[in-house]
Image 1 (cartoon, one colour):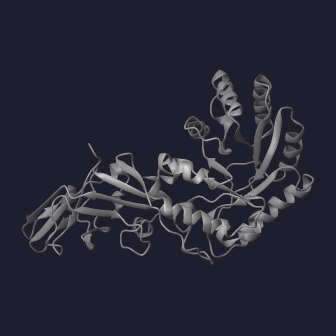
Image 2 (cartoon, rainbow, N blue to C red; image 1 turned 180 degrees about the horizontal axis):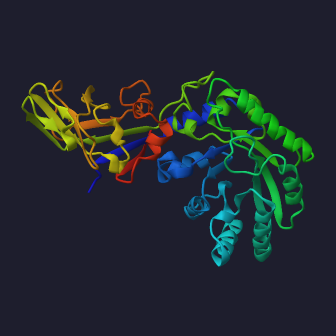
Image 3 (cartoon, rainbow, N blue to C red; image 1 turned 90 degrees about the vertical axis):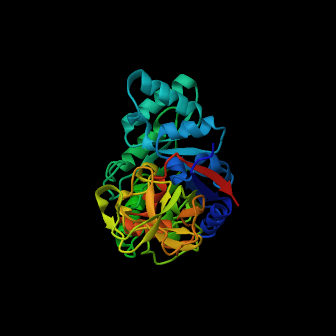
Length: 376
């Protein structure tokens, strides 16, 4: 039986977006495509082969994600952002590290102690472990502090069985119009590298989607775009813009259409009252599928090309929409829940604005009940 929800993922859009991002780079700069969280909710099964064929490297959050991609048969280089040594402890950590090293996963480390664990794993397998060191240049999240980083780089370079393949940092607000803090982070990062002996046989990378588009001096040896690959602007405050194409269109079929009299109230809490005789429809999505409840009485969908406002509270599995101005609507008609037109009332960008969040959250929330299909 087919799903009530259909998520069309456009291969053409992703290909175009990757080409636009490549066009921002110098020929020698590598592109590491961030595919964590199931390609930001768009679907590994649909997109990994396409993206892996056009990127130099993939990046994920967790070791488990990296191993899942390997088990799917992809041999492209993979970098994990989470520290592998926080993944487990004891025998479980040993076994996990051994598998990660054996499958040539590039591991992020944030301390010399972690390098020792990785070195021991490499020795057990008779292999060389590839590691990247993350430096915290001001985001105050993960990474080694700048004053400790040069020493850690030197120790990593001397650790048996370990190859330092990269050193990186992450920008806190490169998506803002004011780039002063991002430039300060970049200066701190480059100072760390200079103190450690300069750019040698490891890759330097700092640029997320926003920096790829707006901060070319941060491109260095490799960039790590994420949200832009899937067609969404990192923010609406960038100085430069690329004509990115959203990859996701989400639709379903109206489950029921019926008439209700004026004065009727709808859904939990009876938070909306129809002031006129109205026609309503049920759309097959809810907060159980990642459609935010805070969009109640605020968002709209489209039926037969016309706007159908959301009425009342969004439920776990369904949403009431107003079809009064679309009298020809019938049960079984397509309801477009999310449009791939960035200017549409039901675009990811507009839904994010209404929900007080960012496009990342809208796409990442999309649940497994939506059947993802790769289309042209």
